[in-house]
Image 1 (tube, one colour):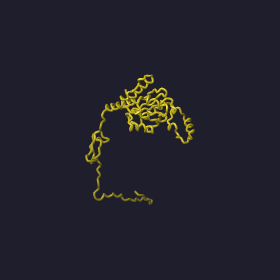
Image 2: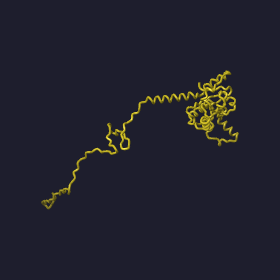
Image 3: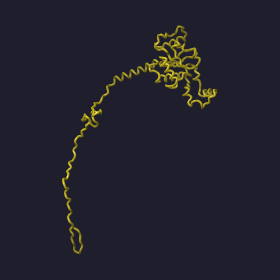
Image 4: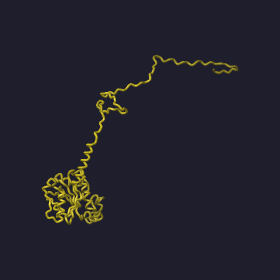
Length: 274
């Protein structure tokens, strides 16, 4: 059993009335400390980290309004990454809660709330939903946050990222995303790809020959058999058969002269050339 598997089991037993429910944290020393992102709702103060059964010294608690993550490189991701890199966090838990007031706030209501503070609409970002990360479902908000954290290049690929909802009234935990299973699936997929790669035949390497300092394929284009490349870059041009050309020596032969014209006279004085 792994850390959050033990936490969920103990939490459900405790909510059901088992006073002996708890987690032996010394059995999970390799998974501590835990980094948790929760909402700023003050009703969470008496619940965490007690409902997780994690001692405060092993609980790195990050908070923002609505436990919202807006991108894989947001300021919230920066804090989560530094909590792991500097504070040594081994596992991450995104913990939403029921009856979240941020999720119950509409855009129009949000604009009105800012107006009461003297902040007009033109001072606010154009896309309020994207900037404030307003959501309608606590569960979907947690799922989105877990996905962004898991895909962030700032979070180590071996760190489990869990998604949970805590009931604000009872303290019962609902496990939405089992970070261990996500890593197990990724590991199996990687192993399957490696096994597939090992079963593929070796690629056929074309034979090569060196022409001077340039590596050339041995079979030239247009030929089906081996080529006859001349080493050291000296290419021999095959002999070609051309028609024999006879050249005149000395003076060219004389051009024959046309015969002289003969004038014949006919009776009556008519003369014609013949």
